[in-house]
Image (cartoon, rainbow, N blue to C red):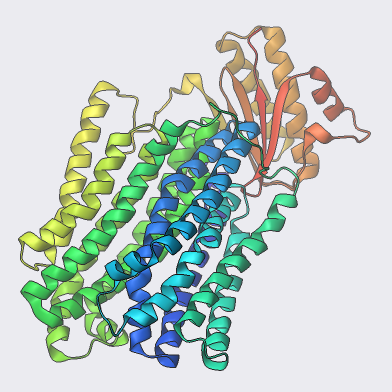
Length: 560
């Protein structure tokens, strides 16, 4: 018997669908929001919102530094069954968001005039920009809390709740835009207050999640409980990538304007919009790899991680290949949809899109490696990707004086550097997989199978598990005890859980049992049957969790 990827695939689909819907809803709402503001107030309002975006981007970049990193650390802690550590990291992130949000509000109010002068040098646009910016500064607290809740609720097993919250929040944003601007006459500040309300709605919608049993809880950390170095290690690559994206946008606009003129700027805008559209797929996959992958890392399930990445790259390859073909075959039609119809811009776009599609594909393939390298301690590779993927395409576009192939060549250089670096690392440790650098354990050290829910499969697997544990140095008495415990749990899954498949994974320190049956915690069993009473009476150290729509039981093995 061997393990298959069914349960990992189910977890992948569960998170991926919710994540893509969340990103898509946000993108659609942003377009609708911009359309409402532009039509009800005028193009100057759109310019004022755009001038204020560096503030919103800065808040997001700061949040990425500590929220994304602590979320991954929480996932790893959950995978290890360390709920205490997970709760302390969650509390640390919540307090940081609250205190940082208050500090940004106070600092923004105190330095508002200076901030306004930096962001806007147009006397015509400054009054409107200031009206929007005042409310945007006040939004720092709910904005940071929304980011925090959304990340942690996702890793805590409820990605669909985030999708609902984002959809409902954006509906409120659009409705409030119309109400505040058209009927209340608040102008551009009405649009800012509508966004403020969206943050509040999103936060309120996810709060009930934490009333459920087994979810993350607030637990004040003591000095020394938080590994700040690890937070920085995980957070810095994501932070620097977010910051450098703004630098790249400014530089690319300058290059396009200098070498290609106004028509080149229009063509670049079309390319960037298409890159943003492709990010719906890429961001959905990244938001799946981070929570699912972090928990698998905590479980020590390297084979599961490889299953997850295989699913992710197959899905990504199919979607982006289809997307790139559309750009190659229908460039003029796509250009028309985005409003770029003048002859000069269209001529540039016809040449740009096929070449830029290569950049989109390479960008996505490399981005997915960042969380993998973070999970497995290859922080230098994560930094190479963060710096290289933002700076080298920018330099390629500049060095070729607006040559569109420059974007792809920059990404290709990054890919070559990564391949060389991973080859060097693997030359020192042959047990690592190519490119991903995930440990590939020996079969003799891991018992890892998937069984169907039949008595015959149960009997075969428990006999094999007993033999395996004895090869790991456990006495026959200890091996029998742990296999009896696992056997009773598997019988319960087969008889009552209505599961389709069960993953069984054992090493010399743990037995892990995952199934897709109905939720059931054997540690809280109070029924009449004797099987689970025997399990609880054995006195083994067991942990239970329900995540990915799966029961997850871990039996800790003592060699005493």
